[in-house]
Image (cartoon, rainbow, N blue to C red; front, side, top):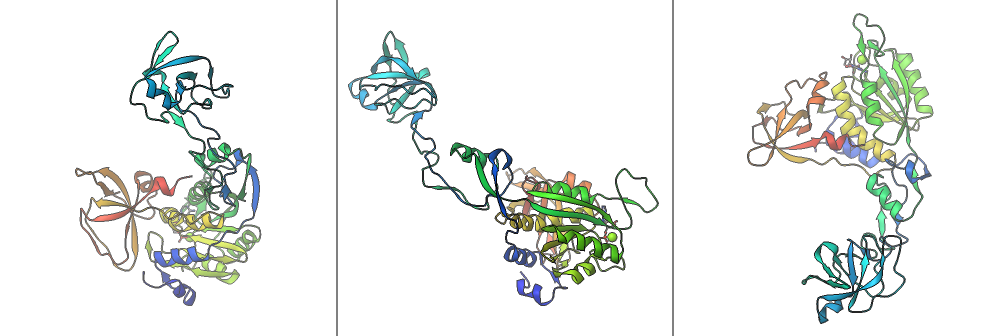
Length: 418
Ligand code: AMP
Ligand code: MG
């Protein structure tokens, strides 16, 4: 990494490397929302505010894992034939009596293990002749029995603060008998696009007009995080309009996400307005696609100024804004996994900035995944994001890629996970 986080403070206008930008954000970001108790059914996708310690065992009691016959394993010392008792145990219906050594009882999956038993023979594996059940040999003690606390032991911490509540987490909370859970409140995010050329989809086209794609890309990306989004629409390339929009947006939102107007062109007012209203940590990043990317503060709100080109907006959001917002929303910093794949292409590049190529994966002859670069890599070619399975990262200092080189691959399936 060239230049640590300190450099960002020293010269906020300087280009920062992707690593330095990520390190700065990771150090700075702490949860900025309060907490609330919500019913489990409303908690999917939220970040847990407190660790959850199990107050009980799951399962709560030893039970049968299959339909069959429960008995004491010690019975087998006297032979493989057991006397079948009257009655049965089923899920929700424990057997009231005790099963003596030498006897067995009909049990169904999920039934509490009857008193006196420790092993279940599967019904498919036994033979019944009158009142006698023939048990197969070689049945281990405890076979087909689930122990109490086998999944979760009472007293253990099952979920940590900052974990994202998905289907399995909610299932575990439910298994523990919890009806509600303390989570972070959703991030309040203001979203706007800037540019005189921008038109609302559905509006009449005009010469030089461009339909606003970024707000829809960003709504889709933000909706995958626990957010409440205020759509502030399109703001003109006008210093006062941008200033007013950012001022208003920062007043009652945790995060302001803008796209476009972040360069140093005559009509790029976002950086200037943000600088005058707050503090920018950096606003140029040595990354392709994505150079004009601004992150800082507007009063109490975090400001994210994304590049105007739709691909750059999406890539910068996925790599930088997504982990930042996840952390601000109370989550742990999500570090995307970099899977090693083989380059299926040759390439030369300029040193000094990292590049993220849109690639498709295919299975190579030797079992490795091979990354093929999508043909059109322009930062305006949004359809490349549909064609691609993800991104390969070319480090800033790298100048040559030769087919067969190992490259780190970031999967859209993971980056876009809800
Ligand atoms: P800018 O970052 O404002 O200089 O914009 C760079 C390029 O991205 C220009 O071609 C813009 O027209 C385009 N662009 C900016 N904002 C959007 C948007 N919201 N939707 C689609 N294209 C955009
Ligand atoms: Mg613009």
